[in-house]
Length: 84
Image (cartoon, rainbow, N blue to C red; front, side, top):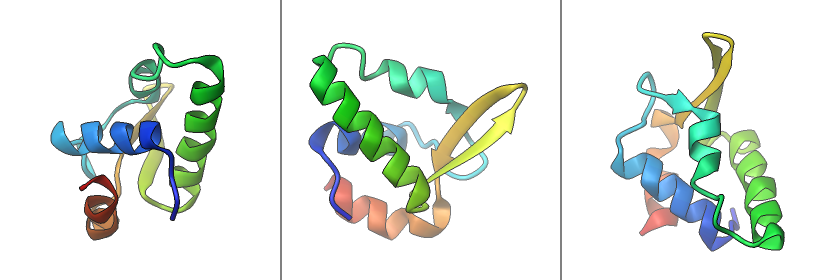
C-alpha cells in the first residue's frame, strides 16, 4: 500500500475526527479538504483516494442520495500504520 502524502492526510483527518464504521461523512466534504492543492497533486490524491476505497481502507455507501465515507474498522491497524 503506497499512497501519496495528501491521501494519507485525508485518512489521518478521518481518523482524528473518528469517522470509523457507522459514523460517516459525505464524500464531497472529504474531497473539499483537497481544494487548495495544485491540479496535478489533486489528481494524484483523487487516484489514491479511489485506490484506498478499492483496497478496503475506506468504506463508501450511498446514504440520503449522497455518497458517504468512513474508515473501515476492520482495517484500522493498516490505517494507523499508514498515518503515523
